[in-house]
Length: 134
Length: 130
Image 1 (cartoon, rainbow over the protein chains, first blue to last red):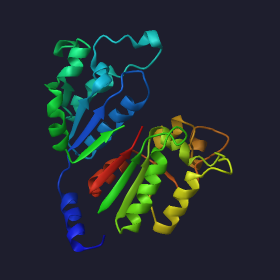
Image 2: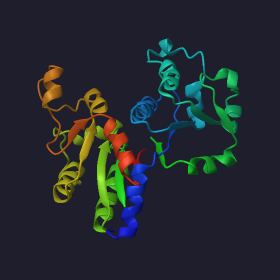
Image 3: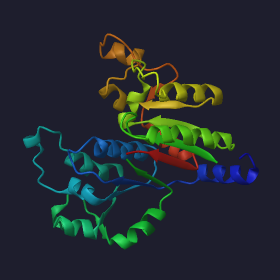
């Protein structure tokens, strides 16, 4: 639609800094989606876009410490996720129910996460302009 | 409204890329604009010119190219995702000393910065994933 009422918000949106939520919902070593989500985080940070991450469902396992990826002959992304902080990406969320399911506490996680209840998740997601869930 | 699309799902294992194509068509028909279509992950295999589609199936790559030609679409393929999956343009084929390039004409290899730019410029960035 070419009406001005629709193009004006576009111009406005371009000038505002959009915040981005990346959702990580696969376990480590399952496929390339976690690594590719991480690469989006770094690219967006390079463009000064504020990025947050939500580790959802099995995605919380990506944050488990003491992963022994050498046994699987796979690349360990732990250090890559730790490097997010160097790009000023320090806003991480996990869901309390997921942590409970895998018996993980903050001490078991490689990043310092905000733990939220599942019923707060929709409200959290709604606070972001762009959500990417690979 | 300005849309951009992030296509992540494999062309061969689901409906997502076809949905993305149909979404693009509908959006354009209704007068919206498509700033960029970004192919990432397994979706990069859709951009190989070496792919042969059976005669009785829809060749989505051809459909993208036709839509892009008619509407001046920007079809960008993530270079890192493409190279690791064997989709190379002339420059990458030469750089990695491979015998042939296979990126379909009409697609462009570029970095994830093009996705970040698309997010900034577009009112909505829509992911077509798994």
